[in-house]
Amino acid sequence: MQISASEIAQLIHGQLEGDGNTLVQAAGKIESALAGDVTFLANPKYENHLYETNASVVIVSKDLVITKPVKTCIIRHAMPYYGFCMVLDSYFNPHQNREGIHPTAVIAASATIGKGVYIGPYVVVEDNAKVGDFAQLYAHVFVGRNAQVGQSTIMYSGVKLYSECVVGNHCIFHSGTAIGSDGFGFAPTPDGSYAKIPQIGNVIVEDNVETGANCCLDRATMGSTILRKGVKLDNMVQIAHNAEIGEHTVIAGLSGVAGSTKVGKHCVIGAQVGIVGHISIADGTQIGGQSGIPKSIKEPNQQFMGSPAQPIKEAFKTQVVLRNLPNLEKRIQALEQRIKDLTQ
Image (cartoon, rainbow, N blue to C red; front, side, top):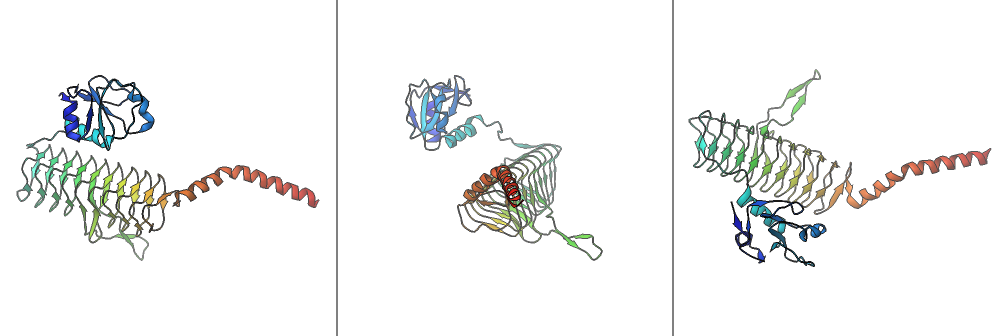
C-alpha cells in the first residue's frame, strides 16, 4: 500500500511542510528508517536523527524549531506520537478484521451472535451468551454462560470469559487472559484447614479497555470487580476480587491490586507494584516500579516510590542515606574505637 504525505496530514489533521505527493509504503524508527518510510519525532533528545534520517515523511511536534536543512517531508502535529499511532492503525496494523465462523466452533443455540463477527477454530460460546457486532474471537476462546462480549471487541487465542461477566465495546484482550476466575477467598475452619468461599459476583469491563497477555481479572465475591473505561493493563497483571480500577488508569507488567481496593482515574502504576487490599488510591497517582503500597493515598496527583512507598522526594532522600550506610558504619566503628582508646 502506498499513501501520500498529504493523505497522512489529512488523516491526523497535521500541518504539511514539503511535497504532499511524497509516497510512503512502510513505517520505521527514525534512526533506521528507509526511503519510503513514515516515522515520527516526539522526544527532543533525538532531534539529531531528524537531520540524518532517510525516512520520506516525519511527524514532528508543532513547536519544534528546525535548525538544519532536512531532506524529508515534515508533518507537524500537537502530539506526534499519537499522530504516528493513528497512521499505524489506519494503514499498517497487522491485525486486520476478519469475518466468519469456523466450522469447529461450538456455539449454543441460545447464544446471540452479532453481525460481521469472526469466531475462530474451537471457540466455545455457551448458553445465553452474547457476542456483539464485529467482535473477533480467535482460536480456543471461551465465552461462558450469560457472558457478554461488546461490539468490535477482540479476544486473542486462549482468552477465557467466565459466566456472567460483561465486557464492553472496542476492548482488546491478549492471549491467556482470564476474566472472571474465582477471587482468592477462603475461610479458616476449626480444624485449621480452609473452606472455599463461593465467588458469586462477576467482572464488568467497560469500553476501550486493553489487557496484555496472561492477565487475571478475578470475579467478585459478591457484586462486581470493575475496570472502568480506557483502562490499560500490561502483561501478567492481577486484579483481585471486588477491586475497581478507575478510568484511563494504566498498570505495567507483574503488578497486583488486592481485593476491594479502589484505584482512581488517570493513575500510572509501574511494573511489579503491589497494592494491598481494602484501600483507595487517589486520582492521578503515579507509582514507581517495584513499590509496595500498604495504605490509602488520599491526595490526588502525587508521586510515590519504594517499599513501603513514600512520596517521591522522601524516597530519593532515603536512597541517598542507604547508599551512604557503608561509610557511616565505618565512621561509627572508628568513633567507637577512639572512645575505647580514650577510656583506656
